[in-house]
Length: 156
Image (cartoon, rainbow, N blue to C red; front, side):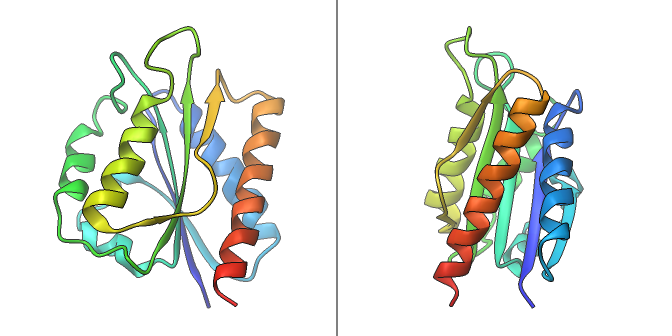
Protein backbone atom coordinates (compact mmCIF):
# COMPACT_ATOMS: atom_id res chain seq x y z
CA UNK A 1 0.00 0.00 0.00
CA UNK A 2 1.35 3.43 -0.95
CA UNK A 3 1.98 5.87 1.88
CA UNK A 4 1.00 9.48 1.24
CA UNK A 5 1.65 12.49 3.46
CA UNK A 6 -0.05 15.85 3.23
CA UNK A 7 1.88 18.33 5.35
CA UNK A 8 1.71 22.07 5.74
CA UNK A 9 3.03 25.16 7.47
CA UNK A 10 0.15 27.37 8.59
CA UNK A 11 -0.07 30.36 10.88
CA UNK A 12 -3.62 31.60 10.34
CA UNK A 13 -5.15 28.28 9.30
CA UNK A 14 -5.58 29.02 5.58
CA UNK A 15 -2.92 26.58 4.38
CA UNK A 16 -4.18 23.99 6.85
CA UNK A 17 -7.70 24.45 5.48
CA UNK A 18 -6.56 23.83 1.88
CA UNK A 19 -4.48 20.83 3.00
CA UNK A 20 -7.50 19.38 4.82
CA UNK A 21 -9.73 19.83 1.76
CA UNK A 22 -7.13 18.00 -0.35
CA UNK A 23 -6.91 15.24 2.25
CA UNK A 24 -10.70 14.84 2.44
CA UNK A 25 -10.93 14.46 -1.34
CA UNK A 26 -8.00 12.04 -1.66
CA UNK A 27 -9.16 9.69 1.11
CA UNK A 28 -12.57 9.41 -0.57
CA UNK A 29 -10.99 8.25 -3.81
CA UNK A 30 -8.08 6.09 -2.72
CA UNK A 31 -7.26 3.00 -0.76
CA UNK A 32 -3.81 4.33 0.08
CA UNK A 33 -2.53 5.08 3.55
CA UNK A 34 -2.95 8.89 3.58
CA UNK A 35 -2.17 11.03 6.59
CA UNK A 36 -2.21 14.76 7.21
CA UNK A 37 0.18 16.34 9.67
CA UNK A 38 1.59 19.85 10.27
CA UNK A 39 5.26 20.13 9.25
CA UNK A 40 6.25 21.35 12.72
CA UNK A 41 5.19 18.01 14.24
CA UNK A 42 8.06 16.16 12.59
CA UNK A 43 10.62 15.63 15.33
CA UNK A 44 12.71 13.43 13.03
CA UNK A 45 13.15 14.53 9.41
CA UNK A 46 13.89 10.94 8.41
CA UNK A 47 10.18 10.20 8.96
CA UNK A 48 9.58 11.98 5.64
CA UNK A 49 11.56 9.30 3.82
CA UNK A 50 8.96 6.69 4.80
CA UNK A 51 6.42 8.15 2.37
CA UNK A 52 6.03 7.36 -1.31
CA UNK A 53 4.39 10.70 -2.08
CA UNK A 54 4.28 13.97 -0.14
CA UNK A 55 2.21 17.09 -0.71
CA UNK A 56 3.66 20.16 1.02
CA UNK A 57 1.76 23.40 1.52
CA UNK A 58 3.08 26.70 2.80
CA UNK A 59 2.14 30.35 2.73
CA UNK A 60 4.49 33.27 2.16
CA UNK A 61 4.97 35.87 4.87
CA UNK A 62 6.91 39.13 5.10
CA UNK A 63 9.80 39.26 2.68
CA UNK A 64 9.22 35.80 1.20
CA UNK A 65 9.48 33.82 4.42
CA UNK A 66 7.68 30.67 5.52
CA UNK A 67 5.05 31.06 8.23
CA UNK A 68 6.50 32.37 11.49
CA UNK A 69 7.24 29.52 13.84
CA UNK A 70 8.12 27.05 11.06
CA UNK A 71 11.50 28.47 9.97
CA UNK A 72 13.48 26.20 12.29
CA UNK A 73 11.74 22.97 11.25
CA UNK A 74 12.28 23.72 7.56
CA UNK A 75 15.97 24.50 8.13
CA UNK A 76 16.28 21.30 10.16
CA UNK A 77 14.72 19.29 7.33
CA UNK A 78 16.79 21.01 4.61
CA UNK A 79 20.02 20.34 6.50
CA UNK A 80 19.23 16.78 7.55
CA UNK A 81 20.59 13.69 5.84
CA UNK A 82 17.07 12.58 4.95
CA UNK A 83 16.98 10.74 1.62
CA UNK A 84 13.94 11.59 -0.49
CA UNK A 85 15.33 10.19 -3.74
CA UNK A 86 12.56 7.57 -3.83
CA UNK A 87 9.86 10.03 -2.79
CA UNK A 88 7.72 12.12 -5.12
CA UNK A 89 6.57 15.52 -3.95
CA UNK A 90 4.06 18.18 -4.95
CA UNK A 91 3.91 21.69 -3.59
CA UNK A 92 1.22 24.32 -3.09
CA UNK A 93 1.55 27.82 -1.75
CA UNK A 94 -0.76 30.59 -0.64
CA UNK A 95 0.15 34.20 -1.19
CA UNK A 96 -1.03 37.60 -2.30
CA UNK A 97 -0.18 38.70 -5.85
CA UNK A 98 0.02 42.34 -4.85
CA UNK A 99 3.37 41.60 -3.16
CA UNK A 100 6.65 41.05 -4.99
CA UNK A 101 7.32 37.98 -2.83
CA UNK A 102 4.15 36.22 -4.06
CA UNK A 103 4.53 32.52 -3.16
CA UNK A 104 8.31 32.67 -2.92
CA UNK A 105 8.30 30.55 0.25
CA UNK A 106 6.94 27.43 -1.47
CA UNK A 107 9.33 27.88 -4.40
CA UNK A 108 12.21 28.11 -1.91
CA UNK A 109 11.01 24.98 -0.09
CA UNK A 110 10.81 23.04 -3.37
CA UNK A 111 14.29 24.14 -4.44
CA UNK A 112 15.87 23.19 -1.10
CA UNK A 113 14.18 19.78 -0.93
CA UNK A 114 15.12 19.00 -4.53
CA UNK A 115 18.73 20.13 -4.10
CA UNK A 116 19.47 18.98 -0.56
CA UNK A 117 17.33 15.85 -0.20
CA UNK A 118 16.98 14.63 -3.81
CA UNK A 119 13.18 14.91 -3.75
CA UNK A 120 11.42 14.44 -7.09
CA UNK A 121 8.67 16.91 -7.93
CA UNK A 122 5.48 15.84 -9.67
CA UNK A 123 3.45 18.49 -11.46
CA UNK A 124 3.71 22.23 -11.25
CA UNK A 125 3.86 24.18 -8.02
CA UNK A 126 0.34 25.37 -7.32
CA UNK A 127 0.35 29.05 -6.41
CA UNK A 128 -2.91 30.19 -4.87
CA UNK A 129 -3.68 33.89 -4.76
CA UNK A 130 -5.65 34.86 -1.71
CA UNK A 131 -7.71 32.90 0.74
CA UNK A 132 -9.36 29.46 0.69
CA UNK A 133 -12.59 30.37 -1.07
CA UNK A 134 -14.60 27.78 -3.01
CA UNK A 135 -12.79 28.56 -6.29
CA UNK A 136 -9.34 28.14 -4.73
CA UNK A 137 -10.43 24.97 -2.95
CA UNK A 138 -11.63 23.46 -6.24
CA UNK A 139 -8.39 24.45 -7.95
CA UNK A 140 -6.34 22.83 -5.17
CA UNK A 141 -8.39 19.62 -5.06
CA UNK A 142 -8.23 19.24 -8.86
CA UNK A 143 -4.47 19.95 -8.82
CA UNK A 144 -3.93 17.28 -6.15
CA UNK A 145 -6.05 14.74 -8.05
CA UNK A 146 -4.06 15.40 -11.24
CA UNK A 147 -0.79 14.95 -9.36
CA UNK A 148 -2.01 11.69 -7.85
CA UNK A 149 -2.69 10.48 -11.40
CA UNK A 150 0.85 11.49 -12.41
CA UNK A 151 2.20 9.64 -9.37
CA UNK A 152 0.21 6.53 -10.32
CA UNK A 153 1.67 6.60 -13.84
CA UNK A 154 5.22 6.77 -12.45
CA UNK A 155 4.52 3.80 -10.18
CA UNK A 156 2.88 1.33 -12.55
